[in-house]
Length: 353
Image 1 (cartoon, rainbow, N blue to C red):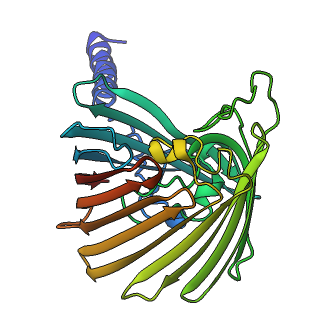
Image 2: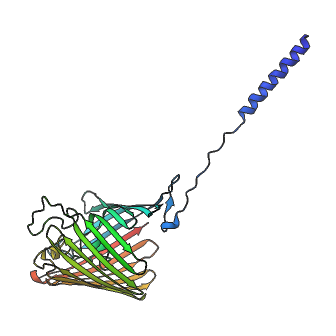
């Protein structure tokens, strides 16, 4: 092999190697596939799939601030003005299963009032599947009947306990008939301890709530009973609702199994004087709501007890824009047995998201 051939061969080899290196240098890496957030509309507005899973997530909440003048629950209160601000965060999840949707709901609440430190409360936290609910939420004695009227001071006359642990089964026949049975923690919620001197230190039995309901057209009827296992007494409420579009109305009556005692489902745990006095044998509530237009609604609620406690509240709910509420309210309460009464007012601003 002569020198000329050797040089030409070496040059060709170097060119091939250089070309290979140059080609390697400009090869771009494969882009990572993008995964867009998918809307999950099977469970209502606001849900989306958590990327990489089949679980749907919804995040919401509210910010509320309000001024309060005097206290509709306490005639001894002479504090002229209180200002209260609240924030809530709601986190809901849902996943489809062979037994129906597996859901959770969590509500965390922060409250700030008149220079006090911020209070944090795990308001609700529960799991539901196939009609069963387990965890913390409001008593079915209140939830099943739909609480009371569409006013802020709706429970000056106490209508039942709120936050407590429970195991609940809800049944919906799909033809207007509904039912509920609930075992509720006797050691949690308002009125959880014996309020008539009962010893609850070694108590273990749950409270029991059961209810039936039926809805046909504009009318609905519900009845629910609660048994306080510490006091060994209870109460029954029955409610009739009517919604005619131009106005809605309700009337609800409650009966205490022993009017001489307070129990968890009849006055025990109320935050005001009416709770100390109690219902006596019975209590009654009624109210109306009139939508004036798509942004404005007027509400009125009245309540009265066998123990001669009277409460009246009226408000206007105004939504100047979507998800913003401005709500002025006025209340009058009268406790005949102690010869006291009270006027009170609230101005609330609330933004929901």
